[in-house]
Length: 462
Image 1 (cartoon, rainbow, N blue to C red):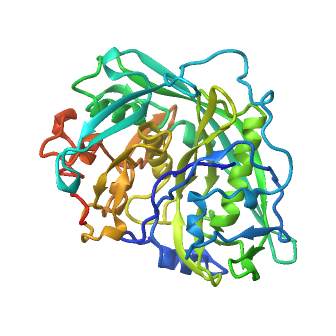
Image 2 (image 1 turned 90 degrees about the horizontal axis):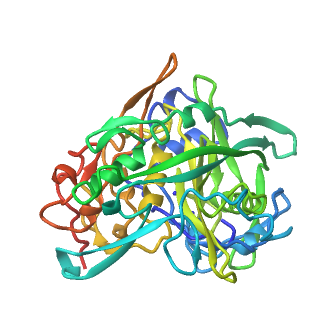
């Protein structure tokens, strides 16, 4: 869902889904109009180095560099964007050391300091890659060994302080969803076909290894709110384009839903710099550690891209996952991290709501923590065959996002409060294998809705 030199996540898609209820929203400066012609999706990110510069105060006088050779700024998440995060000090090994000396899990990869992972592989069963061997690395300990791996989920929440063009305050967008996040299926337990009293990502993990796992095998997230920050967002930022020209570009659009909830569409280049700097800052402060999944969560904040002329070209990215590394250290530290936005009702259709993005990115981090799990090139379900929109990676959330309904409702009760969440349905490992049958629970290719994907992936046309 992708940053100091950062590595990447899932792909932004522009088909299939349409925003809901925007005729009723009270928006200005084009925010509602932009959403009305957009589709929710996710971004591919590239890993970054932790010793990139840090500058937490990016203003209207800052100059962001449009990526060279690109037709859209969206590629910023898949490039080394150190120039966009200029200023300040970088990585401090002493301040990034783990607090205490406690680890809930241990790296199983020689030469790496990170969380627990296990490895496996599959042989592709159809298409041009028939017979090709694809290895993978997942978060957790080996399924057959059983037992429980506890992984800290270190969360920074972000509030937005929006400025007008003259520098005056427009309004604030606070992150008011902490309790709902903590009480969501990502961290609270529910019953699934793969077991009772499970967190969402653990339920999916167990579903795809159900027939080989020990009965007591679990991979559990322990949420910890480690920081709460406010980011000041200027109305305009300067962007330098490949031809050398510098243009003032609108940094955000914002609007208000009928219930008073604010939403923000932010320029991806600005967001990338802010997110990268915040992650490095949290690493330097010891808030994010290598034995955890770190999460930087935003309130109704979605990303748009511009083309080489500075015009808006696509919207809206909801999240990405990536990792940060120090390539000069031995063993090499790697921080698995992600961005996701809370999604209020009425913003998008297709079941994209509340924790859809967070569940998507968490499932993908479990299944591709270091962004190197490759697969045969696969088509998106129900989308006309087109090699330009195929993918060849084990990003487990992406195939579902183009379906008419991408999420499944799960109602949880916390004391007297009842809330219906909408985590995303997730394709299982077996879907990517392109086989006629699945070795997962019930022979399924998706979970928890086992009917969402009735067969495995179709090979991409040559």
